[in-house]
Length: 68
Image 1 (tube, rainbow, N blue to C red):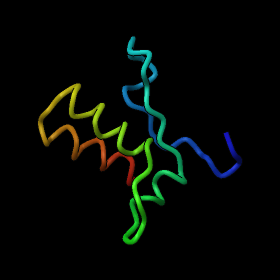
Image 2 (cartoon, helix red, strand yellow):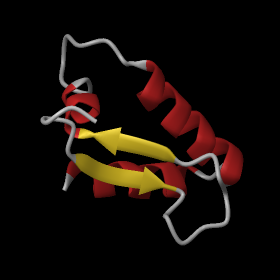
Image 3 (cartoon, rainbow, N blue to C red):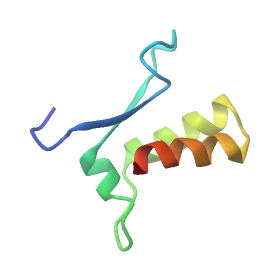
């Protein structure tokens, strides 16, 4: 992991038995700014959230955790 790739969020959490965790880092978060393109990690993250629990509430809560 690069020096600026600070771990911000992991989904599902490290306590989960799911081995296909998605790790979001600071550079991934910067890709959410206007004018930036999404990267594969962000797309994988939101697909994983929606496949795990397809309610909008879960996706919104996950995004809030990344933003704080």
